[in-house]
Image 1 (cartoon, rainbow, N blue to C red):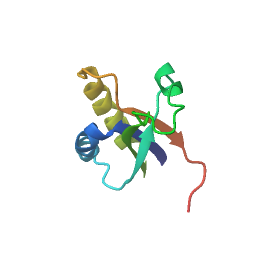
Image 2 (image 1 turned 135 degrees about the horizontal axis):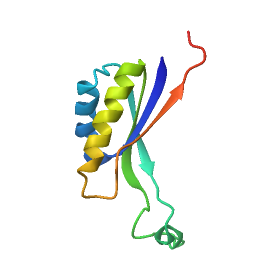
Image 3 (image 1 turned 90 degrees about the vertical axis):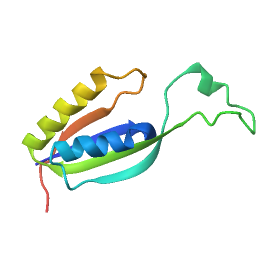
Image 4 (image 1 turned 90 degrees about the horizontal axis):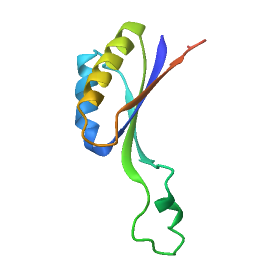
Length: 101
C-alpha cells in the first residue's frame, strides 16, 4: 500500500475524478486548497487591498491504494498532461507507507 497525492487547479476537478475512476481508485479524499507560484507578481501585493489575491483555487486529492492502481493513475495523468494548453499540469507524488492500522 502507498499514498498517492494529487494536486490540480479547480478547472480540472472533473477530469481528475474521471482519471481516478479509470484507474479504479474508488476510495479517496479531497480538499480545497490555494495554489501559489513563486513569481514577482506575488511580491507586489503589499497594499491593504491588492487587486489579485495571488492564489489559484485548487484541489488536493489523496488515497491509500495499491501499486497497480497508482501505476494506472500515473499513466493516465501523463497522457492528460501531454495534451494541455495551459501551464497548470496535474501534479502527483507517491509516498511509501511503512506502517498502518
